[in-house]
Image 1 (cartoon, rainbow, N blue to C red):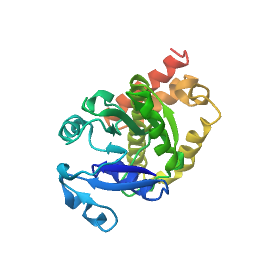
Image 2 (tube, one colour):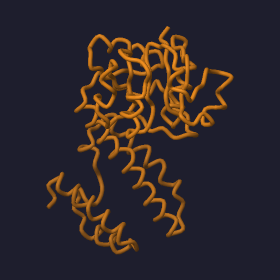
Image 3 (tube, rainbow, N blue to C red):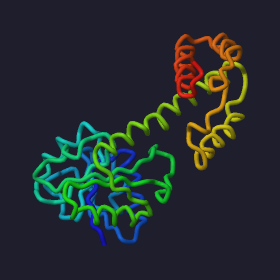
Length: 253
């Protein structure tokens, strides 16, 4: 049984708590948040606290807080030489205070408050300053059904940067597409099968090989028509930038 103390109450913390509660080999001994009202609804299921001095002993302390809060919170922990990990993709391993055994437990997934997450489909990137701490992090990942990936800080930060492109930026493009369909009285839902097929395609093809469309074909007439259709200068700039990026990749310029 792996004992855990969870610190933080955001989306990542909430989803991890649910995953830990459903895992037979994990015991969430305590849940801390500086605003205890945020976790008050769980008080009948787990020991909750807003007092760092009352933290109990556990195998792993997970700082599932904002990137900016990791360093300060780890400094405030009233003990030393225990395994303390954060869940950030972009923050250094060394943000955890040096008096602790330092590590990272980074679930590479998008977490929204009301969206269920299947942790069996979540890659778990683990990192530890001392290699003897890695097996425990891998065991914790396995306990919630995740496949763990041992990464170093550069690899993890590169993955996080790449994730911004495939998730956050892509979602913004969905938002722009939604605005375009609304402006033309069409239903955005009609695009959903295309969205799914585009994602499915890279299961068997590289993104390079999967690319289609007017930019790759260098269909200048269609490209000019699209830019003319766009009413927003902001959208025109995005269309032009991405078109040129595709053309450069595929040698069309």
